[in-house]
Length: 308
Image (tube, rainbow, N blue to C red; front, top):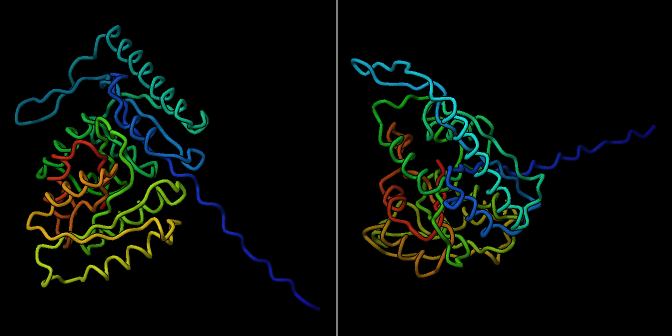
């Protein structure tokens, strides 16, 4: 008697869902504008738009830094914030659908803040396993202020900030295309390489240039060729065509300057990089590293993708 062997068919990978922070001003939706202009295959991606309202119960700082509950916001003013938030969310949805996103691929969320905008967005993105959290210009300020508060940040927040890649959107792309993927030999850069591959592997309309910035071509712990081969394997395993992957090596004593200059010359739409380089210390796990922070603060015309 012959026994038939059943093969297990792997279940399809769920569509990545990108969380985009939406402010009250419908004309400053830089994250939505980036998504609408950068992506091509909208059937393979979903978007969740979130607007955070002011807290229903105000919190004030009392003696010795103790947080105390203040009065409730005026009801009429709070309802006005709600209306403005929903109008902004609907405007953002219309922008995405107008670019070709199926309406069922866009969901809206509006709720009061609990711990501050930056931390609430980070927690929301991590707890619901989003593919990325997209911040605009104001989000950049919230992010910087949160990460700068080193002594007061708990392990829970550290884990949350590392849970989901962050995208910091520009005011405009000015017809830019393609991705500049920065490599330094750390696990962080391999993680961002996998994220890039999963994001654009099915898109088919962006090339990826792997960039290695050397301070000294003759003194490097990991040869560029080794990094490029490892990164190429990661990208191709995520569906990126081999002919869409390029390599570039630049020598510069200031890596952030070299990254920004390469981005401008190549008119890249995205700079993708790890949030920190070598090492596993508390600060490296918590902070955006010095190179990444310098790029974050100076980048104007491209979107920055960051991953732990």
